[in-house]
Amino acid sequence: MSGLENLERGLMARITTSGIGSGIDGAGIARALYEQLTQSNVVRSKQISGLSKENSSLGKLKDKLLNVSKSLDSLRGSASGSGEKAAKSSSNSVDSFVQGEPFKLPGFGESSVSTSANSTALESRMKEFVSRFNDLADFVGSEDLVRVTQNNGATSNIHGALSQTAVDDDALAGLRSAMVSQHSSSNTSSLWSLGISTGRDGKLVFDESVFKAEFEKNPANVAETVRGTADRVSGVQGLVQNFTAYGRSIDLAIDANKGEIARINESIDKVERSARKAEDGVVSQFSQLEGLMARLQADSAYLGSLLNS
Image (cartoon, rainbow, N blue to C red; front, top):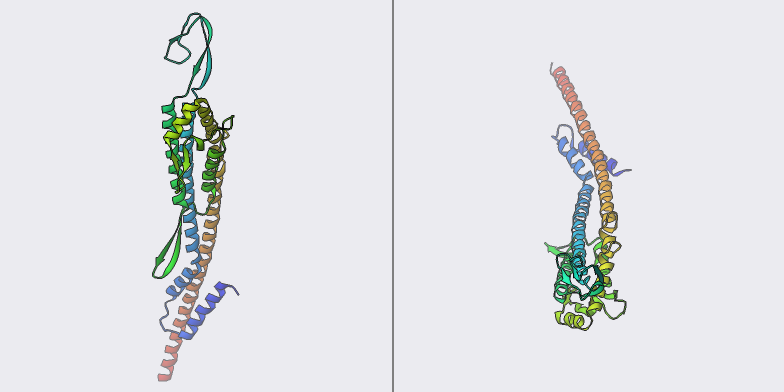
């Protein structure tokens, strides 16, 4: 026997035992049945709310990852001044080597000119990258947090919007791995050896003095390490793209949540229709009962009149 049939039998038992004309609130009983049948939809609505919040936070996660990527692009740009370029001119004056900066070459024909990364610019970009990373780390920590609350002796857990997904943790772990493992071709330098370390709170710390010492010792090696790390993280096939590009990890998680929300909404609609049908059925039964009561009362009055005549 279904739960609905049990409820209906219970209601009819109440009607029978209460007696005819006892003033039963049929509409109230029908509404109580509806509310009991749709109780599970309260839980479903909370599930939808949680999934919607997760999708909103996944969108914010994408933005923060892209901010980290942009900071690494700027860092790469500051480190891309190292190397040699050839310039050829019919005179010893060249204005096409660096746009807007004409200069004199030592002779005629082809010459080789060396350029190097700027320590101050690199240091500034490193600070920007650390700041962007720490902003991401703060966001992930906050969205993953599960808060335990006490209310009138009852304990409840309030889950952060991203506490039910691993996408944010995977992205953060991937960034940390890239910073530790990416070395220059000489295998002597990583961002960790350029003054970046992890504090007790899991955020990055940048030691400018270590960076300056490494740069003075081997600026080309520092620039190569920075470019290699940036390529691995923010390049076209880099780590960030694996999470933020169209149809990748974050989009897949959002689409999966949207599909689950649609499924839950279908369940809510199905329960609502079933409960409404049951409510209408009870109202109909009470209408029939009221009609029967009216006929019984009429018959009773008629019989009374006959007995009194």
